[in-house]
Length: 230
Image (cartoon, rainbow, N blue to C red; front, side, top):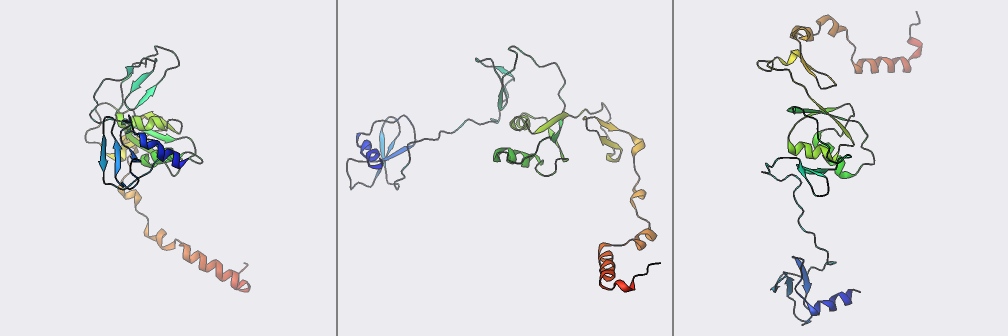
């Protein structure tokens, strides 16, 4: 079969696939490679690289940079073209309800990554949700991020973060709280002073560390007759 594939290259015709290389069969002693570029054959001194004939064309960019078109776009087959992905509504002519987009997303993982393909795990690693299921990620509401979330929409839950109006200037982070439903609340009453985080010196002195507990329990195991029962 391999020899037959070599003989077929004797009648080398202009190939449509750009980048296919064949060994010239007209002269067995000729070590040059002929490139089939579609219109003409160009000899090359590069070493022979045999292939199965399959050509991998450069794919289109998922998120082309500088693309500032208006989305969604109507496709001939009834789908909607968004930035980086295509969406086919269940009902033809379905339109999104009017809403004001939020600048941030609260992303949580809802499924396990076990037995999932590597491309899903790679995206989850970029987001930062590849460890504990209780972890959360706050991402920007940009076309590039939304196109990435679309590929793992079966693994995550996206909640828009609702920010209060006219209260984001000179904000103290200790007065803020982000709820699970995406509400970002600001309450000065929940502010915790730094003095409350300091531990009492008396309690620290009486605290048993792990090494002390291990040595004490090991001593009781090695010398049980020294244990005071009362």
